Image 1 (cartoon, one colour):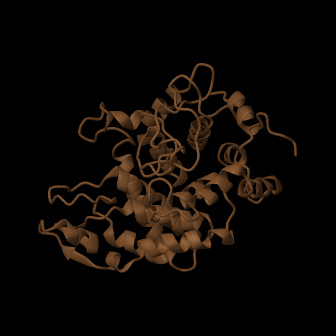
Image 2: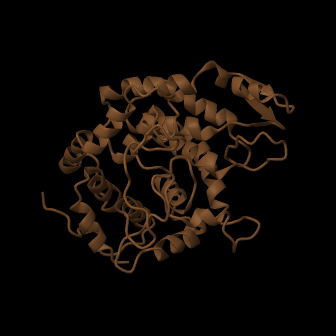
Image 3: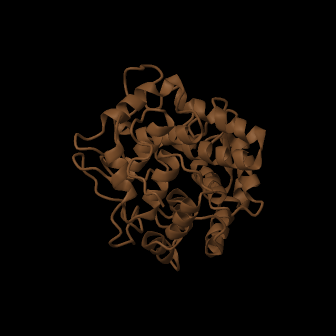
Length: 345
């Protein structure tokens, strides 16, 4: 697949984060190169980052308020390539870690179907499985590690996630006793967070927990039913959306597996074919829907602080295109990308 046109266009983008993504995730340029370091500093000063930081300051919402709270702002900054160790982010980190390391997550109880208020006071356990929305702790772990903000508390997040991990490798917050399989939505961010922490800390048990989590997606061939391999697990999983936030889908699942080193597994083949087939005739990949509302009127639920490009099945979206190219590059499916439109500086 010759994508030199898309690569060249993204390298001309006004968004430094898009240029950073292409250089590091598509063209394979090392993070220590002078150009990449300069790009990340440009990301730090970019209007998009400034809007995120200005928008979250003083908001009368909790850390997890969708999609405007500190939790989501840190995840966005990590995805955008914001440089590590920025002291401006320490108050956001403390708010997020204070939320997810509160005492309630250190307590658990045997869930016998009692009042829901007990669920809010401790972690329920039913039939030997912790019923916990692990995407929250997984997302926090991923952001803290990626942004170089770990003050020692990331290890506690990793410990909790491993303690709550289900036998099949994932997590689920479904309190129904009959729920015995992990949720792909609740497993995606923990897989990525544990992989990031395990790789950075050289922690083999954590890395192994991330590998087990990857099996939740690989046994489903990313987006297909285990019981009926010809059918999608959910019709919406085939839609391309960005950002994914905590949602699993074709692009988010493949990107997570690329990030953790599993995208060349043969069980990803059909999902990769599906992604490649969504490339538009004129080049690029579209955002076929969105999980967020526009920034106007940020008091509304699910309103992001920034826009992420157009959502249309017929027009390319640069953020989706960059993510698709990164996945296909990691899978060894791109021709004509290396050096395409790359400036000499």
